[in-house]
Image (cartoon, rainbow, N blue to C red; front, side, top):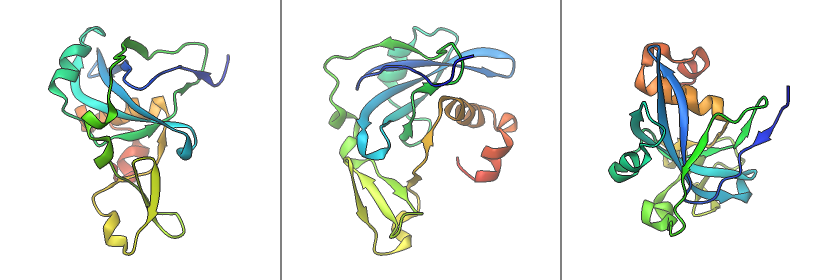
Length: 168
């Protein structure tokens, strides 16, 4: 078994994420917003609030542009010999500012001092209250993203670690 197989993605790529919800095979969809070398080489992605039994339904997901949760940092590294996520659409004219890139904030509450990431840079916060309501910085693995999607769609099926974390 191989470890660390990478999916090569570009800004604007839309990926189909296979998940199982209530014994049904479905696809969730995410878009790569940006590559962020300052955050461990992670990708900033948005996961859409849209499920389908077909991996080719990405056009509907993007047209609605509703996010399942705030954008997150993701590692595109998969365990094993297979990469279950598939690039289903590439938007060569993708403009990250059109999806609110300049307004996305992610909190680094454990930094010393705590920081907020925005537009590829971090800035220190003057008060911990600035961090309230902002997505916490975690570089999510594909499996963790799948589990977070499942937890949003079917909270009873949420992984114990995710329930205990308090992450929505």
